[in-house]
Image 1 (tube, rainbow, N blue to C red):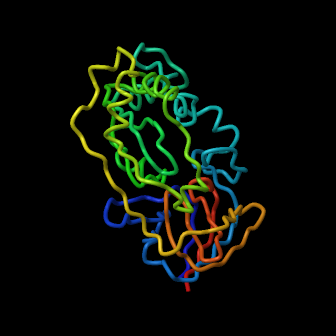
Image 2 (cartoon, rainbow, N blue to C red; image 1 turned 120 degrees about the horizontal axis):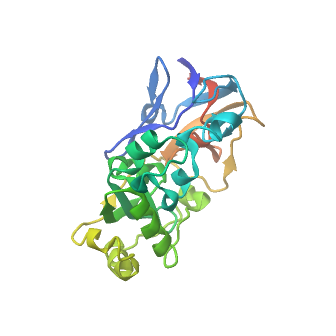
Image 3 (cartoon, rainbow, N blue to C red; image 1 turned 90 degrees about the horizontal axis):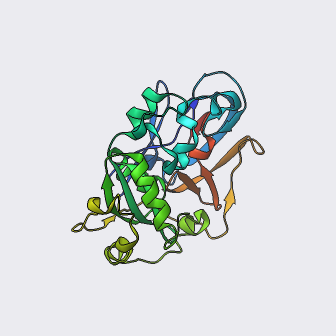
Length: 264
């Protein structure tokens, strides 16, 4: 079976385990069905996810020019506390910023390598947790805009981590945590503007990933340096493909790469 297209992050469907789909313009693959099969990946060229031109990808699937121009790559995406649509102030495109920022957002705790705090739009729960490879997660507050979520995250980062160790996550070198206790412990540090949005009576969500074999000594596949790779697919976690020889491939980190995929 042969497939060709530009890589974007894998789409997911909640279940036991999570179902993963690699979606191309005219085709898609259910990646779970490829477990224990030989898969080859061949890097062909770049294609910016915004302008669709064959230009080297800079970050997040965008070429250099698009990354510094389009609202989808603005600073408030990574740092939600910089959001300004709630005060009617434009960054790059106020209409877009209002559409994205002025909707319910969730501040959450997720455990993928350790307990970390994060922010996502409510519509992205539990997708965001799946993409991070979290095996358990819980909401702390649900606020009406991105700015409130951002300042809450900043306040909580003084008391809990905000980064995932991707190597620990992929090795599954993790332990379970009582996220309800973490949520209650952190309540006192929520800014007063967001205190009323604290979620008191919820339970953690547990996530099961389709992994047959976890890697021991990770080897990260870089398609620019190694344009062709072939291996037996043994698992999918977060946005990573895990292969039998301990090679791991970050699909999301390779957005905007046009590839040919062959399954034997």
